[in-house]
Length: 231
Image (cartoon, rainbow, N blue to C red; front, side, top):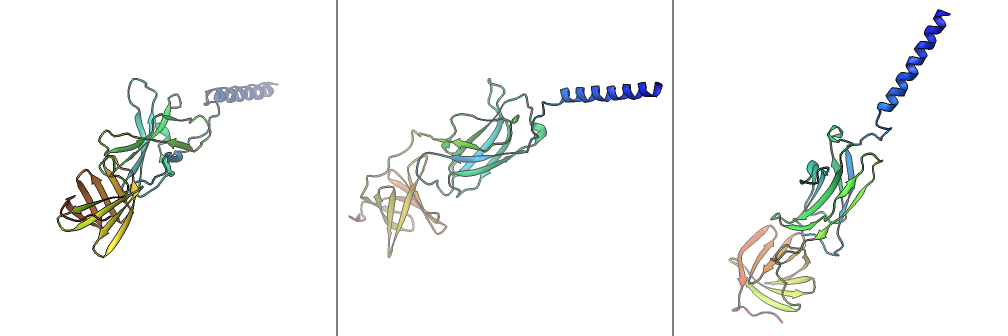
């Protein structure tokens, strides 16, 4: 009889321990994967500059009286186009399930000038199963942005080592060089009118310009009224 009482007491203790353990668990929350995935995109139907980079950050936004604390960050390589996929890797032990977390994204040019940014936080719900996020970024209006020359206008430029004529068309420019013509599509720029195809870059701001071709950057480019402009 004593043995039976001992077995019953042991069984009761096990059941009690199991019940307590269940209460101490985090309500059967899913395990943290260590990854937050998704994509960054914008509404404009225009290509990113070839040297633009996309920065995606995971932040702790529990405190409303200060900016979010960075948990993880990813820089997507230059040359990528939207929608751009991201995979933020974080340390699970750095996550406090009682805090609030969100993902933000920005697109910057080679001078770290802001071109697009997310205007709202996209919450990450660690207490639920992983779900890819879609981060829609908004174009930044820069007060220094210069309106590109009128369509069908041709402007002559003279650099330190080269001369050419830029013929501006809708969302593109033709660069008329000696013996060849290049057509470059317009890309987003924080300042001035910029055109690029991955190998050649033409950046015009007022009476000055930057021209780069085959890895060579031509300096001192300015409009030249002494050169005849093409019709």
